[in-house]
Image 1: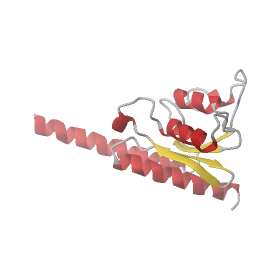
Image 2: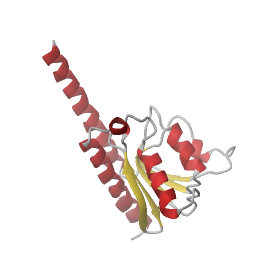
Image 3: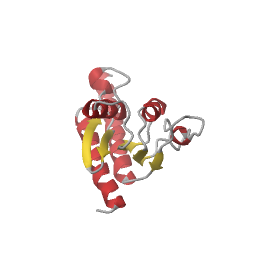
Image 4: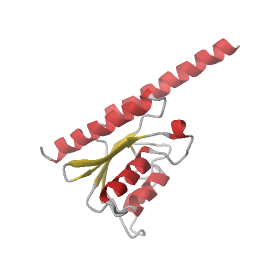
Amino acid sequence: MNGMEKDHYFMGLAIEEAQKAAAKGEVPIGAVIVQGDRVIARAHNLRETTRNAVTHAELLTIQQACETLDNWRLEDTKLYVTLEPCPMCAGAILQSRIPHVVYGARDIKAGCVDSLYRLLNDERFNHQCEVTENVLADECGGLLTQFFRDLRKRNKEKRKTQA
């Protein structure tokens, strides 16, 4: 597989994680960390399930990868995530020294890789990341669009039955 094919393959695995999140009523965001051609961690959002603000897909995946490698430095890995990371996740990416982040859809409301800020490429930090954006962006964004469309519909029906 060439680089683009690998990116599509591993983003497909992140999309599978996002679908697991959606099935649980979670915002459908999934992440995978790869070392070479081997998946070392994978997770999806669990904020609603855990009632914990920090159980984002990226953070859970970083935690798993650190445990797998028995090291907080993830220097020879690549993170695939279906949505542009938020400020909290971008900070964790920098702190864990992940050298390359690949994401699907942009997040115009909270994205801190390209949309609102460029935290992963800010030379004021002691670590920067290579970034590849828009990998399977339509599929990643479509999951989110459908999830929120369905959520609004359920909430509207719920309000009708309560009235």
